[in-house]
Image (tube, rainbow, N blue to C red):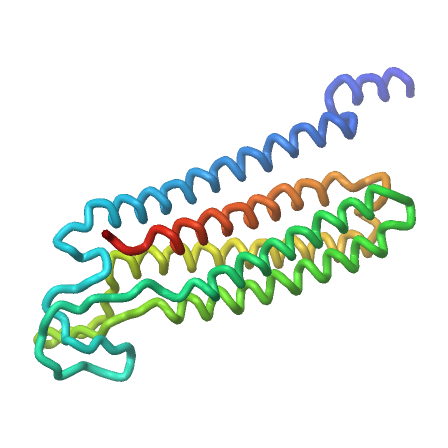
Length: 236
């Protein structure tokens, strides 16, 4: 029996928790690093299109009706150059506040879980609150996406919605944010359930830390995006 046990240990079937934790931390940091690259690509696209402003199309569409409309139908005004205004920043910063609060709740929950053997119940409460707050973030972000100006174009037998360069990139930011917030909700709900089944506890808190890493990163990326979109929108 001793020989068999040693053989299993040497073959890696019974790795130390520290080894498993180190591998999982590497995995989450690689995942976050990939997400950083994606965010960087979106920010580069936004700043590049704003910088070059090809044909003055960053916030305008040449040849559009003088009054742009949404899904109400085609406009009949005389075609001219439509000039778009930056979106209001209030909702952007409200979303930032909600996501930061959500990340703080998850971080506090993790601290309570690691602090005492009785912290599992408190962690579940914090995880539930963080998850519900992330759901609020999804609702607000959907509202923000719906506010992105879109313009109805009819040409011969074709009809479609068009966006300015500014509107297109802001729409991409919004859809990306919704996807990330949905991930937060799924992760938060998963931690809540696992804590209820005693899979997460005072002795087994590693997964809560991994999720907290990602949650805080989403909060930071939301802040960075809001700063860029709010302060660097118009072309002077």
